[in-house]
Length: 203
Ligand SMILES: CCCCCCCCCCCCCCCC(=O)SCCNC(=O)CCNC(=O)[C@H](O)C(C)(C)COP(=O)(O)OP(=O)(O)OC[C@H]1O[C@@H](n2cnc3c(N)ncnc32)[C@H](O)[C@@H]1OP(=O)(O)O
Image (tube, helix red, strand yellow):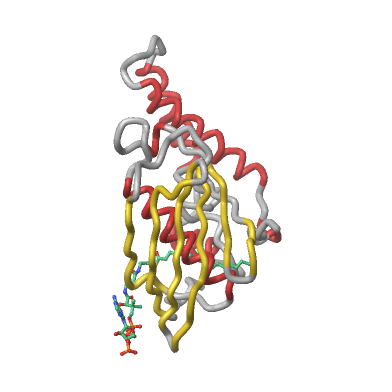
């Protein structure tokens, strides 16, 4: 069962613009200097788009309030946020009442070692996914510790399954585990300690 991304706040045109930005990021990294495209002209066009967006954008303080409307999963975060071009974005499904998973394929913008996912990107995906698993299980908090083991390299261009499960809640201490697998094998595993604490949402 897919986990609902706050359906009352869906914004298909915003998500489509973010998807287009993801394509731009991917194409820029793929091109580098090995392109016949006129990169000076492309920089001008991209800056023109940024000028339009900045001219119409709200004050940051207003947007922060907007970002934190409602409850549940955010739409702007850098892992699952459909309106954040940095996010792949992961789309979570519930496995059971304490476990979630997402399948994603990462490309060149996320590269660390040759043709492999950057270790920091894996940490980002796991930190967030463990946090969402906590939210899904009903008791969430802030990351206090995140221990990662990199078992083998995590491939680009192949489906990755990112899984997280809330293991225990002891007072304010929440323990959660997760992993990234490819082709059925574990690439990265994670153990997290979360402390039940919630900074106030901007209002
Ligand atoms: C329908 C859909 C549902 C899903 C809905 C999804 C919801 C949406 C999900 C969003 C998912 C985002 C997932 C990203 C998660 C981040 O990215 S969070 C950002 C990164 N983390 C931080 O910035 C945290 C920074 N650190 C802090 O703010 C504070 O140190 C902490 C961690 C909150 C703890 O501070 P505190 O509340 O003052 O806690 P404190 O009283 O000192 O300690 C409480 C207990 O925890 C222990 N403890 C505290 N820190 C540690 C530590 N590092 N190591 C070991 N023990 C510790 C203490 O020893 C103490 O133990 P006891 O004495 O009670 O036995």
